[in-house]
Amino acid sequence: MVRLRAHNIAVSLDGFATGEGQSLDAPFGHAGGRLMSWFFPTHTFVRASGHESESVGGGSHGVDDAFAAAAWQGIGAEIMGRRKFGPQQGPWEDESWTGWWGDEPPFHTPVVVLTHHPRSDVAVGETTFLFRDLSPVDALSLAAAEADGLDVRLGGGPTVIREFLEADLVDHLHVVVVPILLGRGERLWDGLEGIEERFDIEATASPSGVVHYVWTRKPRA
Amino acid sequence: MVRLRAHNIAVSLDGFATGEGQSLDAPFGHAGGRLMSWFFPTHTFVRASGHESESVGGGSHGVDDAFAAAAWQGIGAEIMGRRKFGPQQGPWEDESWTGWWGDEPPFHTPVVVLTHHPRSDVAVGETTFLFRDLSPVDALSLAAAEADGLDVRLGGGPTVIREFLEADLVDHLHVVVVPILLGRGERLWDGLEGIEERFDIEATASPSGVVHYVWTRKPRA
Image (cartoon, rainbow over all chains, first blue to last red; front, top):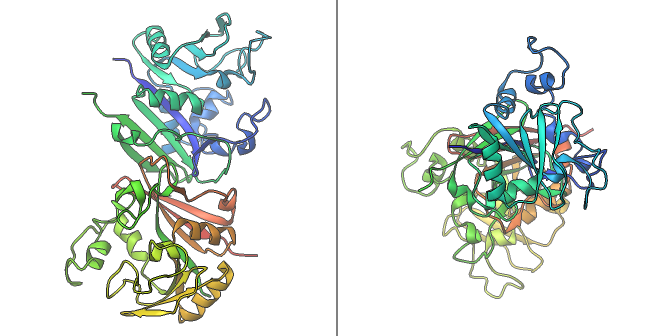
């Protein structure tokens, strides 16, 4: 039974998952790095950044790291929105852009990139990006087939998370509430009134100041 | 040094402090009792409801009760918005309304009710309601003078909380985030971008599922 899981989705206390004014230089807009400041000190991030070898335990190993690390466990494919893949809009004029992540992206699996504009699949290191114009349910079918029996990660951004929640396809949702007020940007929770009834919800406060919410889909009838 | 404190301000995970469609029968609109469901089982609520004598320890005594009880400690006056006092709008056509709370309101102190429409002060049990058309800073001056050396409680609703936060008059803010998505209503955090920088913030997750945030104003320069 393949599960669809979203992890490390950070929002401000007033509910914004990105700030205003996103660009190539500012992927979170005026939020800057503030939504992910809990993540940067973790062992998971330090290790993924290549700042040390796997055998060294640098970075924090507390509750923030435990949640951060879970995002990479048992995942066989990812689904992401086009804006997570890159800042371009409209038809792909330049296929030389292969994402933000350099020669070896951190996914190491197939990644379905949702886009209305056709583009050839591309392999970058151990990751293969599949560009598709699909509904949420069809995207999940494709990703599940690619996942080799493991789970599928829903990578964001917020529009994609909302669409899959609306379609009731999400089995596991990990949201990190950061105690800042962004005031403007893109809200994660809009249009989702009442969906909490489908989930069991657990909240864990971290010494770093953030609160981790884990939403687990109740068994379907 | 009189402090201004707001307590037990409940908001949904998507930031709404009240639902849509408020009325006499539904003071929280379509939210119903859901924003306060963490509060009803507490000893503080059970006792205040008169369901038992003070000497009996009914109700819960965990973290939700500890925060609920703090709202009543060391308070000498309250400031509230008119909509907390009653559902009427415009000029006071009927002064027989003396609030939701019956013959003995739970305040037992002077209460400054902010309204643009004049009305005579009224004593109800041990509580005196003072109806005033004042700016936040002047309302705080009056309430502080009435508080007999104790702190002033900022009682809400959300519009009043926002106005006093904007004016940087709040020293202590206790917000309870309830894991529901209301989708519509009145937002607590609108227009307050960046004010978290003035506060130290602590989050505590309760077994009931809510998260208690305490915002403590940093020392003023």
